[in-house]
Image 1 (cartoon, rainbow, N blue to C red):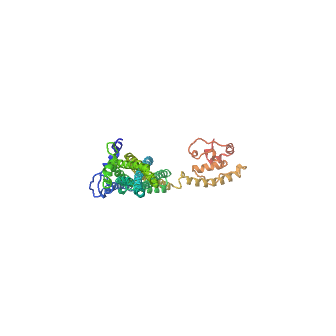
Image 2: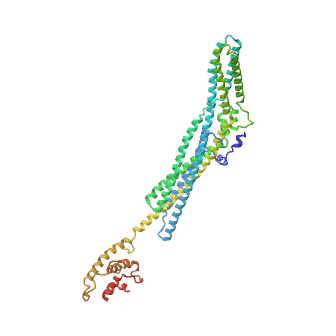
Image 3: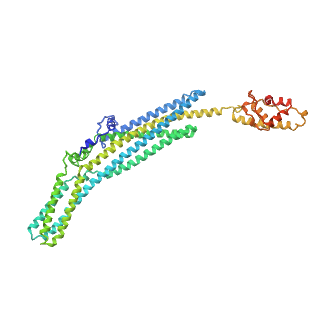
Amino acid sequence: MSSARVDYIAPWWTYWLHQFPHVTLRFQPLDHTFKPQDENYQQSLIFLGCVAAAGLGVNLLCLAIYLSCLCCCRKDEEEEESKKSNSCCVTWAAVAAGLICCVAVGVGFYGNSETNDGVYQLTYSLYNANHTLTGVDSLVTGTVGGMQNGLNEHLSRLGEIFATRGDFVQTLQFMQQMSDNIIKQLLGLPDWEKAKVDLAAIADQTAYVEYYRWLTYLLILILDLVICLAACLGLAKQSRWLLTTMMVCGVLTLILSWASLGADVATAVGTSDFCVAPDKFLMNQTKDVISSDIVHYYLYCSQKLPNPFQQSLTLFQRSLTTMQIQIQGLLQFAVPLFPTAERDLLSIQHLLNNSEASLHQLTALLDCRGLNKDYLDALIGVCYDGVEGLLYLCLFSLLAACAFSVMLCAIPRAWRQIANRDRDYDDIDDGDPFNPQSRRMTSHHSHQGNMHSFCSYSSSMGSQTSLHPPTQAVTNAPLSEYMNQSALFGGNPRYENVPLIGRGSPPPSYSPTMRATYLSMTEDQIRHFGEDFRA
């Protein structure tokens, strides 16, 4: 089998992250060796988080300066071109913020998934390695217990049965020596429990933390997307309360983005320090517990390296074979003379067969290929998928910070535009004929007055010689003139439109009833109502 050094090559991004400065909180430089239990090394990772906090401070300071300039340096923006320019600027800023936010959320989902896959592969490998080591301890404990208790008990009874035969007793003593030799070889195997590392507990804790990390980032991604969409909706609807709420949420999300960036960078740098030289760290962690030859054997698993368990397993196999031969001889020669010894001899034979099966399983479990595969899978999961996912999460945090910074710059300008629009609307003169509310009020009063004049006129329609022009003054406003004419012709204005009256426009179209009424009018009446009705 090829060496693990050839199979595992740290990715380039781990070397890049490994080169990040490692400085304590007192600004003392450190080497880049992975030492998670060292206080100074922990401070160097905290320092990276402080750099992200400084970036947050600079970002908030820039936003504060921008908002201060926007509030204090008010310019005259009443001209139409200036308003259109500012509106276009706000629109493009909202579009840019929305696009950046969508890209950030997509990158964040990918990074969160990659990190979760890497951690899952790590925990899966830890469970497999723990299963292997637990199996080795179980086989060793079971075999040693069988030899110390079951075999010695049977040998003691056989010694009483064969007391009159010295050769049989000598054979039993030889088997006792072989049993002690097997126990000695098994106890010489490394005791993994002395390492005081419960891989299953580590895997459980890692999976627990990863679940809540994944869930937290999922909620952050959804929150960023919802805030961005709500801000765009507030800009489109020009809703003040929605823009205010989204501005507060944007500030909180901006702080959260920088905080997550600091945590991700510190975690990525620390993990990269491990990934660059994982063998060195593991050798230092186990040097006082397990022989360096054994650790080296499992980490590299090369055919050029000798198996440190080969001698113990070979002696174990030879001792079992010798004991099985002795039991076969006693079954053949001693049972005919001592029939009561058959039961104990068969029990010993069964015990030796079980021990041989345990030997084969133990040989397979102690082989370096199983644990080395778990080791490589864990490294690939952490250093490839895990660190890559953290880098994507860092990119997500940066993009989210940019998106919400742009959004926080656009919302105050949109607020000013909404305020200017409302102020201009409040400044409209109520007497302005082009004011919709004033137009409705004028139309209502003119309609009532002219309807009264027309009724007075039409009541004496049969006696044209007694007709006199109405004494009520007629307004020259286009809208009142239109309502007079509309009332005269049955109150049906569908043949006329207001903008056409009094502006030299072509004559309107009339219904047959309106034309007949017009032709029956006298010259005085026509002069009274104006020349606009001439066909």
